[in-house]
Structures are given as structure tokens and as C-alpha cells.
Length: 113
Image (cartoon, rainbow, N blue to C red; front, side, top):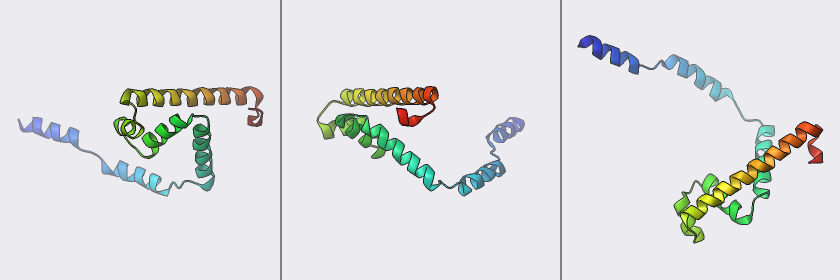
């Protein structure tokens, strides 16, 4: 019986030395100004290709972290409608970026897009 308890206890034991090493790496990693600029431009590009309604729903859902039900109440539409808007907005962004990436791969120049 005591062996079973010891075995269960050992399985639950976590090595904090490995975790602490990873935290040091995360702690020292700073986001450069260039990375922040690229991220900001990417978000702006995604929002620019969406309709106004899609942009409102995406901002409320991802940036303001509101639920689909909260968004539906604010916009006066149903929760399933919010879900469809989110899905279509994500599909549109994926289509745009798959076209964008494939065009760069073919031409080698993103200015031609």
C-alpha cells in the first residue's frame, strides 16, 4: 500500500529546475521595435481587408476579449450570426494571406502584390 502511494506521489512530482531554466530564457527575450512594428502592420493589414461589421466583431472578440453572446447583444444580432461573421472574417484573412504568400514565393517581390 505504501509503495502505491509513493509511486503516485512520484508521478505528480514536477522538476522545477527545468522550469526555472526556461523562465530565464523567457525573461531575457525582449520583443524588438522591429517585431512590434511588423506585428502592428500585420494586424492593420488584416483589419483593412475585412468589412466594417467583420472588423467590429473581430476587434471585440479578440482585442476586447468579449464573448460571442456579449457581441451579439451589443450589435443587436444573434450569437450564431456573430459566429458566422467571425468564421467568414478568418476565412477572408486566410485567403488573402495564402494568396499574398504564394505571390511572393512566385515573384520574389512583395511590392508586386
